Image 1 (tube, rainbow, N blue to C red):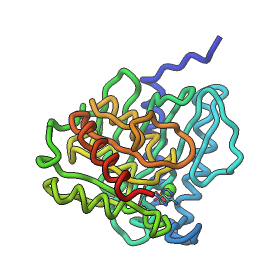
Image 2 (cartoon, protein in one colour; image 1 turned 90 degrees about the horizontal axis):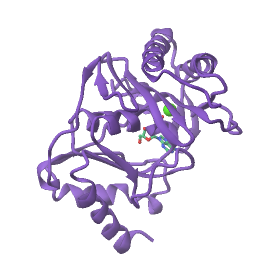
Image 3 (cartoon, rainbow, N blue to C red; image 1 turned 60 degrees about the vertical axis):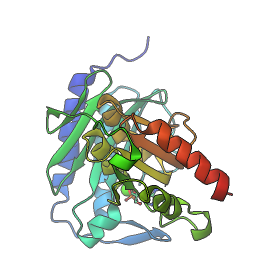
Length: 267
Ligand code: 2AM
Ligand code: CA
C-alpha cells in the first residue's frame, strides 16, 4: 500500500520550515560564489539547503529531496521534495527584497503541496491539492484580466542563456507592445505566486528548472490559474524548459503568441 499523507498538516509543517530556514541565516555573511555565467550561489543558499534537506524527508516516509544546491545524482521517489533554498539569489546579493525559500512536494510527477516564503516582506504563500491557495493564511485567487491588452505581464530575462539562443527579451518586447506593461522580479518562484494572487495576468520565461516552479505551481493551480510548458504540455518537474503561468483566461492567447513568435524567430 502507498504512503498516506495528511496534506493539510504537512503543508502547515512545510510553512514552518520555510520560515525557520530563512530565520537561520538572517545575519549570515553572503559568501557569494559563481556557479556559471551570470549564475550565483551564496552561503545562505547552501545553509538553507542543508537545513531543508535534513528536515523534509522525515515528514513523508520514503520521500527524497531534489534541491538546486543538492547532489546532481539525486534518486527519484514516489514523493519528491523539490527545493530552491533561495530563488532570486542575484536579488539577495544586490539587496533587492525579491527572493524566496521555495518548497514543493510532488507525487509521481504531480504537484501536491507547496510553500514559498519571501523573508523581507514576510509573505508566505502556500497550498495543497484540493485545499485552496493562501497568502499569510488568507485565500488568494488569480485576477480576471481577460485580454493581454488589459493585463500586467511578469517575465524573466534568462541572462545565463547564450545570447543567440535567448528569446525572452525579444518575446517580452513583442508582448510589451500589447500589454499594459511588464515587470521582471528576478525570482520565478515569486512570479508564479504573484500571478496566483492577481498581481499580474501572465508570467513567462524561456528556461527554468523544477525548483524554480515546484513550490509555486500548486499555489497557482489552487488559486485558479494555469501553468504549462511553452508548447502547452504539462510541467515535467525535471530538465529545463520554458513555462507559461497565467490566470487561465489568458493562457490560450499567450500560447498562440509564443507559437507564432517561435515559428518566426525561434530556430
Ligand atoms: P535562482 O535565483 O534560484 O538562481 C531569474 O532569472 C530566475 O531564473 C530566478 O528564478 C533564478 O533562480 C532562475 N535561474 C537562474 N539561473 C538559472 C539557470 N542557470 N537555469 C535556470 N534558471 C535559472
Ligand atoms: Ca536558487
